Amino acid sequence: MQYSAKVMDHFTNPRNVGEIEGASGVGTVGNAKCGDIMRVYLDIDDNGIIKDVKFKTFGCGAAVATSSMATELIKGKSIDEALKLTNKSVMEALDGLPTVKVHCSVLAEEAVRAALWDYAEKKGIKIEGLEKPVEDLEDSHHEDLHTED
Ligand code: FES
Image (cartoon, rainbow, N blue to C red; front, side):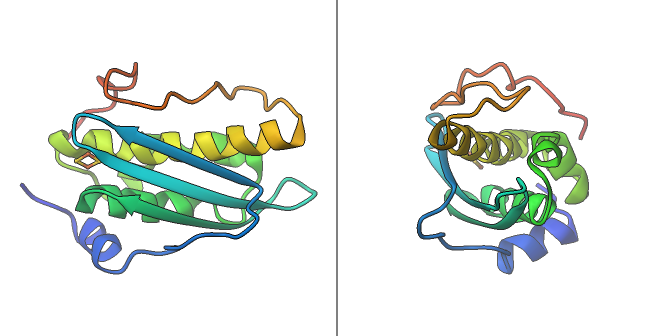
């Protein structure tokens, strides 16, 4: 299995690790097949800008690298921009992932969306284009997506 230099960099030196106390939104997702879990914390200001984002990942190296990259990609962005984050954009930013590790990037995408969902629920608002997150992604509709490399 070959990992890109960027994956190795984000795995050995992950960005935005930690928690945010009193976060605007927290999302936790897991994949029962591999047993990996990801949690994303968002600090969103009154203008809907993601001022800060942190993550904790109890999972494989690719899960660490994809959460690290996902948090980097949405930091300082608006909610709408964060909604555009896909596992594909995370993988592209990391110069690809081995096929058997694609589901790790799906976990990163879904953890961000779960945190946005939590934020919307806490605020009592609806975010257009955001669906209720699934807790276990093992059989999710994403499973067969984006396996180009
Ligand atoms: Fe499951 Fe990486 S092996 S998240």
